[in-house]
Image (cartoon, rainbow over all chains, first blue to last red; front, side, top):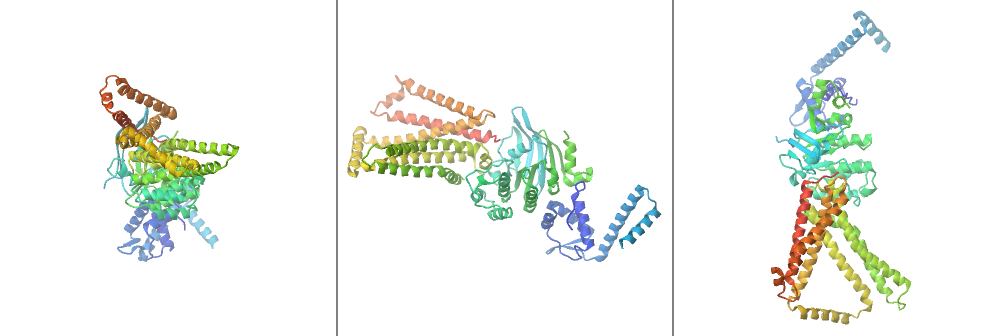
Length: 122
Length: 232
Length: 259
């Protein structure tokens, strides 16, 4: 999945989100070794300092682990990954519901619509 | 740590034109900095002052704590806006020239980049197209392992593919001991690789910030902010 | 750094001079061979002689043009961005170009002599030629005595000093012209003429003006050949050369304004 960086939000926050997505989707599986900061920066065409900042934040969150001698890996804590997944999902849903409400839909209508679309998607 | 570039109340007048009108600035190592401003705002003048191609009217400019001179030229790598190549050498000869005069020049890197950009070292400089001349100049500048890179409009005259390559080269050249200052007005292309930006207008600094802060606090890209600040 | 600059200066300029010297020698040889032809003033001979003279003159004209061009184009036009960002002091740029220009002028003189010798070689009988040279030397020796060597040294040094001073005068004129934004060439020519005239006036004041009762002239009168006077003239030329150098260096250091 290529990096998609918008211009009106800080790059490092976008990098954090996109790396999270890569972890959740399995593109970066648990325990996988990450490329060096410089390589990742080059791949994403961003400043290495910015990539470093994003990775540090992810480390704080616990999604990324730095090993003294062997670089960075994705955490193997699958529970935590699941937790992040659900947090992200909840955020997406909340955003979605807000938007729908903005358009004028009631909560019940929203649920019906969701069921209908899910059905069609099968 | 000592800033790699420092300006202390720097002024440069050309007759009655106050090209640089009192600049105070500190740039640290390991940063990629954008020097952004409209034409005639003083960007090129500041860069030339840093290279000792111009002398200040008053105030000081220091590179790694020293006044511009032979010692600073050894650690500064400059890409001017113009093509400055002489016309009798071949690409190989100018690489040898640089290698001879600059102890931090890495010939291997230069030849690698030439290959990547499909340029033949035996080609004579005078036979190159303008775009290719600019690529050669960029290769010469980026093959030095300098502490300060001063790039004046590096992506102006090149096609989008070459532009990407140039940005990629700047990123891959990055190390904590060197700083890259890019002067340009093509901001949207270059924004995502910048750490910091300096907006300059009429010879004075109007804004310094990190790119992240601008996007965070103002919720817009640097390019958008630039258009606002410098609206005609 | 100076050595490297000298090396590159030679590389840049030999592309012009070496072919010229080669052509000069070739035409000398052709002319020499032509003169073997008893049909003395054939048109072919005339043409080759004319060509030879053109090349000879062209060689010295080239020295002049290359001298100006190397200073102006390489330092004060776009190439200046390349040269002045090199980690070398400005005086090294001036000196390297000065030395190489002198070198080419001296070489051109040597090449001219060589070419003349080649042309004349058919008509010369070697022992007779050497005897002629001996005779010139003996005549000179009878005039100068042991100070013949002094004379020769003075001529050589004088020649070099005069050339150096001339070259530096051109450099300082170009540098002064660079100070103007719009009228560089005009200001250069003006500066050249102006400085030259001032130099001549100073020279006249110091030497000829003191004709009747000057201290220097009395000393000069001690020998039949005015060695001291000539040394003084050389000294003055050298002093001018130093002044031109200093001014050029100051302009390149403090008033450089590449466009």
